[in-house]
Length: 361
Ligand SMILES: Cc1ncc(COP(=O)(O)O)c(C=O)c1O
Image (cartoon, rainbow, N blue to C red):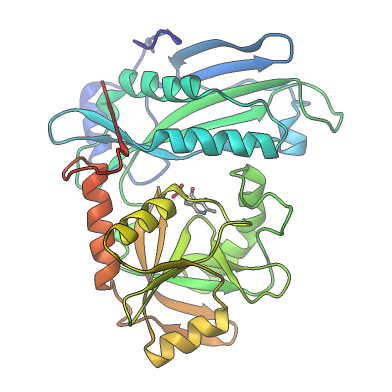
């Protein structure tokens, strides 16, 4: 579109305006898509080339395309917001660009420069700006991803890749906005071992988590919490969110980085809490301690955080041994205050002391 780096090819048959407005009244999550997509190619001999925004449509892949066999794939997730003054903003997009590079490094893939990452997103959002929903709490969810597109069955880093961005208007991640979610403790399946890919945002991590997520749903829970691989004792994170614990002395704790995904929401919450003078520790927390602290009243709140679900209270924890309730089982005060502060900054409704809001267009 207007990005000098990206050629623009308009969709000749975009969704008609009335139909788009109807769809945007109840976008749900991850099932509705815009008219365009961004694409950049990479090959060993040419590097990054052929950057364009084009009509969104199916990809044709040879059955021997490497990603279909060895899952050399990474992705990101971030949101574009419609601001009260009519402008458009992204939240900390260069952090996503950095994490995308770190994931690429871990998966032996080429590193996408920041100007192409940001340029692809800005060009796509400008083309599909009318798809940003305006109902309360909604946004345009952006999904940059890259995969091995070389047609070759040898097990080695591919010599060709496709990078794409698609956009999906989004309402609430949890059905009904979920006042508080219930978590299932995965005592058998783990997500990430030291030296593995837990800190990378690669598709394989999510494929491996699905059986545990299915177990959680069968147990009537919303999400699964994974424990460490060695002792099945230390709390890592949820299938798609990081965790924070709030204690009766006002302090907070979150599991340390290493095998978990370094969440951008996690980092933002850490910063906002510290800004407010809250003592926050990044330290291991054991599952049995979580239960004991919840039962004694020492632990008063737990919340999950991530781009998709923002800040979501955890009300109940269920495992094969029984279940326990956190606080009142509903949203706690610290959780609600941090959520309100974070969303106000994301939507540019309050001063942005850390320069996190990236306005454009
Ligand atoms: C496994 C996992 N943990 C944590 C997060 C939260 O990360 P962020 O706040 O950057 O969205 C996500 C979502 O991307 C995730 O998939």
